[in-house]
Length: 230
Image (cartoon, rainbow, N blue to C red; front, side):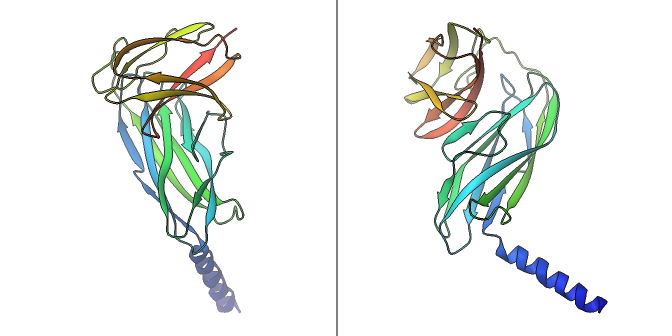
């Protein structure tokens, strides 16, 4: 009887593994630092089923050094730290893969680390889930007073702000800075080109946390956090 139960358990678990519709790949450990200590994770999600699927992304914070914070982008929208499940989905045809996921960790200008788990599953079957954990390691101290040549945009200043904020940029192609709220709603779009400094009016935004996403050729390449105080 025990052997039969064990055999059924093995078969059942094998069926679960075989039923998974997604494969998620990417770096599971990231090291480095930047002018504002933004570490970026890129994952590839592939639909290995024979059906077209609408995929949801779920974030789980395993550990994180205070006062660091994290965000992620999926399905064409970006989400603040308090959002754990994406409100938008990415549709993948059978056999299709996407690189449309980006995870960000901001250790607030200090040596820190975080372990974030990202899970993906079809909207019709939350049990058909595939997860991957990414460890972010931020080390070293860099200046935050000037924009380095390797950076495309700097940080907002003043931040928090109530009326105007400034941002430095160094771009090789025309881009847009897209502001979203913590729910992923687009609230403002600013066009940027070349290099220099831009003053942006934010007095029309309600009090709260927003994210400025730098978008080049349809791809999000940087995200900057800004707080609006009234």
